[in-house]
View 1: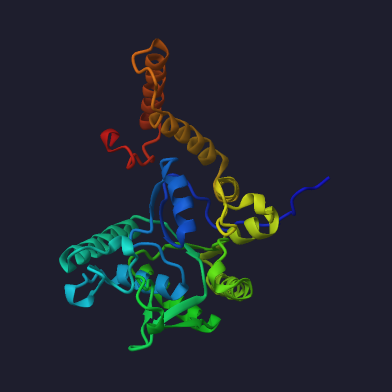
View 2: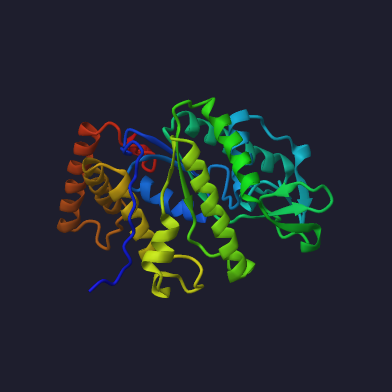
Length: 322
């Protein structure tokens, strides 16, 4: 008896290993995959310039990374005592324009460095809707809770999103000519748009990513959206808000990502690295106990084995071992 729909998927890209660098940009779903890779000691950077939802915003940030131009304080604006930029998440906002610009520029620097060291660029698209300022007509990535009357909501045309992303991918490939691109559509429902509007949006994103992949042999699609929406389907795979996939669902998608896109040897190494990371985060109740001391010795033996035999591992989460 079958309890899950079957998804036929064949990954045609070069298998991903710990020798590869990965830069992930996009929606909050990106953080789930990025943190899982980091926990397995992959060379990964995710959303160094903040969370992004629509393809137009992702394209603009790729252009920022390609250009490397620092932002000036004159490009920021003040609202409710904080300084912001329309294209950056509120994580980059600050009490002074100088501090906000410094944080934005640090993100660009980090993103450029990650891009220069990456073989893979993974883009997760969240929504085909974008918001534009009525006074200037310019798109924004974040409205920073400014009055809604100052923005218009636009469902982007597939052709327009495709043109923007193609130009942006070409720009970053000037830095990394052999860069492989993986495209995914976030399974997170944009419930505020309404279910009908959300489905229209996701449909356009799916058409967009397949157009890009059909016309660029270095672009590949990973069906995270279908894995949650069509394979798992049931609300038991969602959080209490019925919008975000829960931990079990994101774990399932990540396991499928590893199974399809990585060789068996990499998956085995990733699991061993993950076990060490989990052990490193363990907080014992009785630190001086014989059992915990024995555990620490086993951890050290495993760490030395990993560090000696697998120099490709990234110990970025644990700088004391770099």
